[in-house]
Image (cartoon, rainbow, N blue to C red):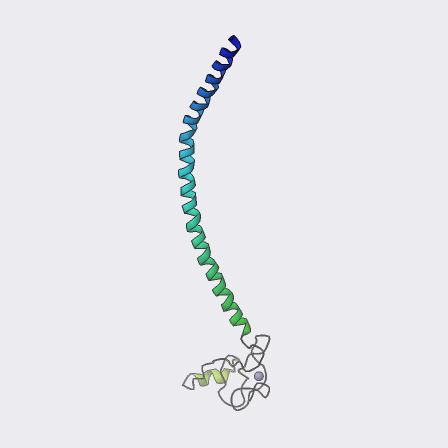
Length: 134
Ligand SMILES: [Zn+2]
């Protein structure tokens, strides 16, 4: 009989302590829930941003692919050099600077080689050497 009472008291104590624990942790759980909701909202915005960044990366990849696929070694890449035949150009002509555009015969080829440098061959009538279509 006494044992039963003891076990009953023990049960009540456990239940009470458990209840008090529950009530005290309920606030924590509520706080965690709100935190979780806030974090979920943040994750959603971050995911949206991530999608945007993925799209931007795809766009950049396409641009890079387009640039790479452009013919670079065909030899027909003529530089858009300003061939202004106005005054002042003659002075440059006399000093023989390599940057002087030669819009005519006898100058340097205006094409760019595969190495990315200015072609060093002598140009023909259209400003290009024999190899670059002059
Ligand atoms: Zn050339």
